[in-house]
Length: 593
Image (cartoon, rainbow, N blue to C red):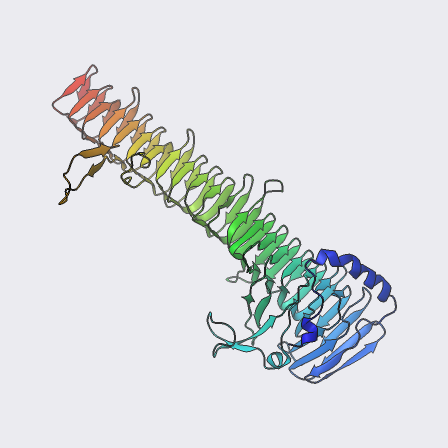
């Protein structure tokens, strides 16, 4: 890379350049040619300028043109004629100001436009090419003419045999911004420390990559872009419309340095649609390490991956709408979620994962399969899956919105599970609520399940302490287990076993339980059914407690078996066969049918 291109004055923000750019445009575009000072430095071809029209004819498969000016006025046009769709031309701008394209740029192949001071496609710009790569970074002549460096796997470009990537790097700090209309049959790539789309981009593949180094693969019909060097305060944003028919969209910002403020921001429309039956598109939003992703607009695709340390959906703007076939939102060390009023709709899976962070689903999520994983998980908006819902927390789960799984299961697991009064959990197959036995702690935290209204084919609830505060109904079996946790001190050579400590095991039933075709089994250290509650099963009702059982009304089609140290019958018992413990207190009738 030549030093004169590296030494151009850097600019940290494209917005600061816009007044100067407009002044240049007003002062120079009146009668000036569209482009100026073009010199072919590698490859074969010619340049012809006639009035407002410039024609670049490329004879070799690769060609490099150095321009002192590549500005295109609103009424001006540049046509690049290339040998074929995979032919590539590198347009390197050597001026000390950003390149501004306001007019028309056409090409039948691949076009690179690089300027270390930035590139602006204005509102009147119309670009129609085979592929477009626009960047404030640069590459060497030798590497470009060779088709790039050899690259294989996840190693750095140039490390071994494999595909060839054109690597663009350098000290250029200019922004790359589109406000016009960019169209490409193959791909559009905007790369540099700060890249932005506020206009429209339509291509099979679209990449906005915020970084100080990128590698572009355009070998044959293959296409890929990877960052090679991070940039402090890297930015990739979309406030316009990006459409990839049957292809992929990627917004990524790669950061480096001690203070990382990487941002990927979408306030516009990202749409990777299906071109033909069986073909779909994907959207990737990535801001690694301590980066942030802000989703305030509309996202539509077959697959969506959002991965960053922080996923942001501000409450002072319209809530984000994500509509696609599959979505993955992941963060490391920060929270993820859907803001109140936000909507996520996925025909396939919706996965929200916070490594060492929390998940908040305050908005609505609709998908075939929903998976939430994190430290603490709170759901306020409804979760609706045509298949299954899985909520797995290392900490606590608080459910304040309804959860529905049409054909499969709902599985909620955490240190504590709390379903607030009035919420409903419904599944076509089973509902399972599970908390692990708590480790020894003088604070006594962990192991509590508070269940509200549940309806499924089967229901399984396991905890250290269980409260059934809402109605539970199942076609098949209902099993509720409150496991007492026993801690035994172990005798060693220098100590004596002093105590046996037991905690939990209380099962409290405040609402009705009913099994239409199966049995109900309640187990715990103690079982307490509130007065007036009903427990009905088509087959058996089994209640087994280490200490006492206090019943409400119980009815079974086959058997009622109560096994405990003592039992208080606080309601009617009705079944063909009833088995009670020896110590029974009752002031209501017991009926064996």
